[in-house]
Image (cartoon, helix red, strand yellow):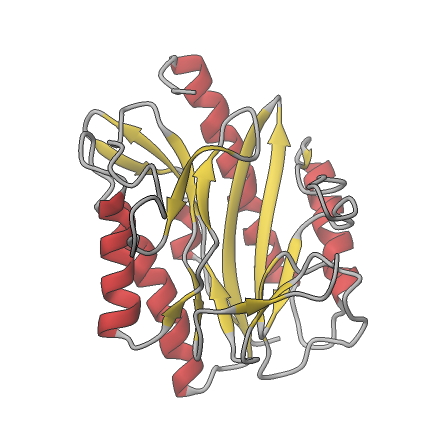
Length: 271
């Protein structure tokens, strides 16, 4: 699906802005001592106040029960898809929490994630967070019309793994959005290592493409683990992970980050 009609672009922008607004309100709400159920309830109430709904709640994927939460809440070694039911322990100073907000607004999807630190992070955690944000910036800049999708992965992987020494999680990546949460193309964060690993790697970025791109980065490993049919995905070695995601519209003049406002918000929770 290509988003080129001005009315459709306005709808996409409105959905993305609601994602950013939920994050803005979260920054003011978050504090040490909150539980994941409390945070998830706040997200649900905020979405309702904004006149939209979660596109994650009750989302169904074969092999999993319906997703139970308003938002994906992934603490510490949880890479993605954390749920508000995974723990009732309160957030503590020193924790990090990746929060992925997905909205459905007038039939259009917005989907973006950011990682927050509760208290000033230590040097290694701060470097991990900065690598996520910078890789997102560089990757988006590489999403130029008529250039191949693989340019995104090259930019992200070079920064994260060669320059920062961290590890991009394998097997997970970005995706097309619009009227549906997940659509083509799949957007790998790493370049393919064998023929057929990423069949769309050389497909070009085309004006009208609307995608959610999302580096997922761990300190110690590229591998993940899960527990049976549960949703959360964890780092294979238990090391910390971060998740950053943006909604990007490809235009004839280049990429437009519809969730650019996330870069302007504080990511350290001091309350």
